[in-house]
Length: 257
Image (cartoon, rainbow, N blue to C red; front, side, top):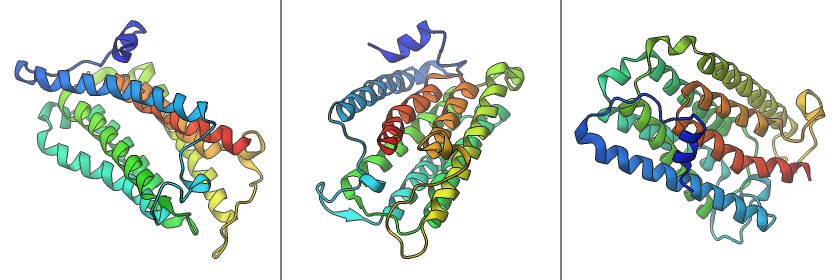
C-alpha cells in the first residue's frame, strides 16, 4: 500500500508546494523515498514485535551484535547528524521558504528538540551503557535521513500561507509539541537524578506521570512529534510522528512489562 496515497485519501496532503518543472524529478524521488520509509518502518515494527524484541540500546543493549561504542556518542550522533544535514541542505534552499516565518519556525522546533534531546541530554546522563556499533550506525543514519526529509520539504518544496499560523492545526500542534517537550524533559531529569555518579543499575522513579505510566519520557516525545506533524500538516511531518510511535512505543511496553 502506498502510504502517501493513503494520507491523501485521509485528507493529509504533502502541503502547498513551490516546485518548478525542472524539480519534478527531485520531488518524485523524494516521494518514493517517503513511501519506502513508511513501509520500512511498518515492517521493522512487525519484525521486532513478532520476535518480542525492542531496539538494542539503553537498558536493552547487548554485545551479541558485535563491537560497541560509548552510549553517550549515540546521543551526540543523533543531534549532530540532523543539524549537519539541515546546514548542508540550506545551500539548496529557496528564498520563499527561508523567508517564510512558518517554515523557519518549524525548522527551529525540529532543531530545538535535537539540541535538547541529543546533545544536552547526552551531556547530562550518568554512565550510559555501551551501544553496538551496528545500532549506533542505524540510529544515526535514520536521523540523517529524517533530517533530509524535513529539511528538503521545509527548505525547498513547502511554502505556507501567511495565515497558517492562525489555523487550528498549527496552534494545536504547537501546544502539543511544547506539552510533549515539557513531559519529556521533566521525566528525563527525574530519571537522570535517580542514578548517582558510579551507579549503573536501574531504579523505579516515583512521582509526576510515573505514577500513571511506565515511560512518560517516551510518551512525551511521541506527543511532541504528533504536535509537529499536526503543525506542519504534511506527509513528512506525519511520518516522523508515525515512525517515532512505532519505534519507542514498543519500548514503553517493554519498560512496563
